[in-house]
Image 1 (cartoon, rainbow, N blue to C red):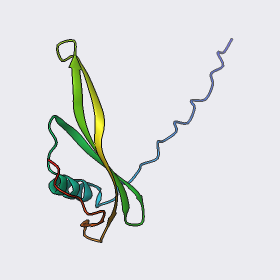
Image 2: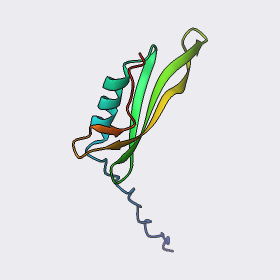
Image 3: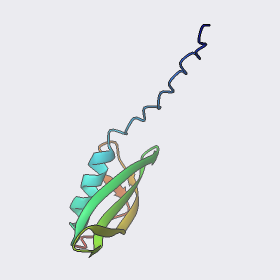
Image 4: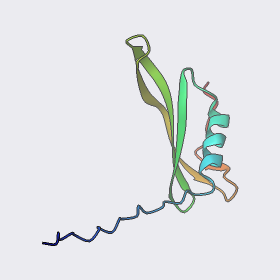
Length: 97
């Protein structure tokens, strides 16, 4: 008696998302204009459309259980319009830190 086997399912390939070339440039320009906040964790820049980006700056707020659990929050958030070089046109970001 022969054992019937199922054909191997085709593996779905995850779509490769391309990052906008100015994503890191915009994040660096925001951090340069704003300054580095105390307990800085990371900065995340997301391309929305055309020349518009959302930039969030995160910082560690609290550490519990001797540093095992870190709580963080967005301390600053910007909706930026940039030029073709990644320079921020709007809003004008004031030095805060």
